Length: 116
Image 1 (tube, rainbow, N blue to C red):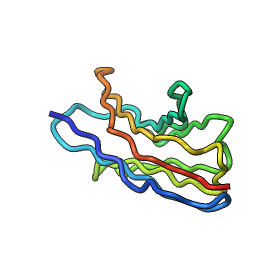
Image 2 (cartoon, rainbow, N blue to C red):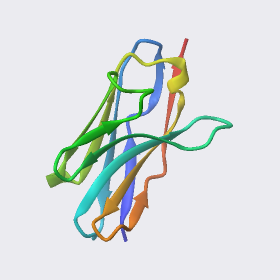
Image 3 (cartoon, rainbow, N blue to C red):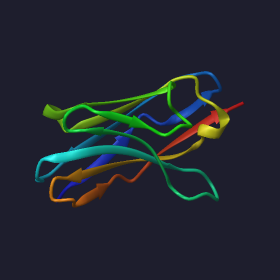
Image 4 (cartoon, rainbow, N blue to C red):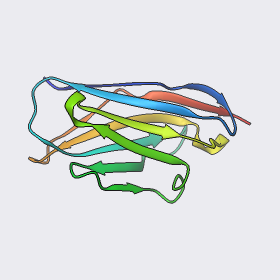
């Protein structure tokens, strides 16, 4: 059984930084994409960033230039470095792994709160 566990969320002032981590455990096929999503209160879940198995990264326009996604394949871990945080970044952040089989796994989420 695959389990994803996020950590690193918390309360930070606007302009501050946080680093999220997501570790996968269990047995799974090769991970094609590692992605971060977020869901703010009263809003739909939105995609934030992805990193491919080859290291290609993509970001949503709302976080481009402020957030950096990275991965450690040996540790089955993905990171999200979040800088210059804004109040509108407040949300529950979820990691998502997609296998080459296209099966996906989700973490339970970690709360990020940015005070203005």
